[in-house]
Image 1 (cartoon, one colour):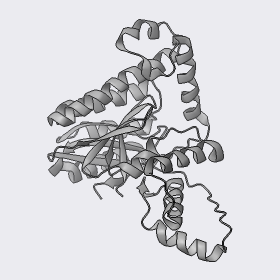
Image 2 (spheres, helix red, strand yellow):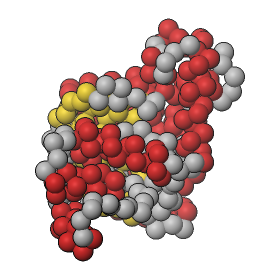
Image 3 (cartoon, helix red, strand yellow):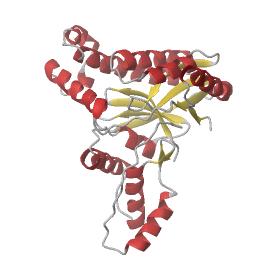
Length: 300
């Protein structure tokens, strides 16, 4: 399975994902109770983990466990059922109020296509990425954590904004709701505005990729990062420096933070032949500006 990168995530409800990712993952303790002897079970799981889906540069622990147990016992579960189980484990056991995007991505992403995902009904479509496109993913060296903190606050704020706007979720908003959104108290108005505009960018990115319009897709990357920084407020200064470094180099079309925010990685859309050069130059610019040694994840 390929690694995955979040190109766009629209208000926890829709997303465009692309193979080859990079963000820091939280390692969770995993416990298995099968009624069998521990030693052979551990050996079997260790063997099957080698074939498990990879996420964020390593085996995603909860998806990997589900994947392994399904394989070990020939359970009649499809990939979507595994994704749901992994999400539930993170929500209820780890205490991280995450959505299902990461789990779906590491099970369904393809290294030659973007994954267009609707997390309301879990329908998805793989969108062919133009051959001329390259991808750069660089980890900022700033780790993020989702079990509580600002990530949970954003989830709560979205719920509060939806309640005030009388919609089930913010993905139900349309451009006609803009004036109502602007009348919300701060910061709920900015949170809802980000969801509305980001969902629009998701749809526009799908069309840009279908049309081979790398310039248009890149501009959407830049707009997305600005919205995530200013309206959703999930970026950090170091990530902003890295995104700017990547977006302004020759051969780069745009860059944005990827993943849950508050650190992690930046993804850039580039010309295919320039990806390695852009990655190296951006990492060096970032080091000089912040003193932090970034980690180039893609290209490897």
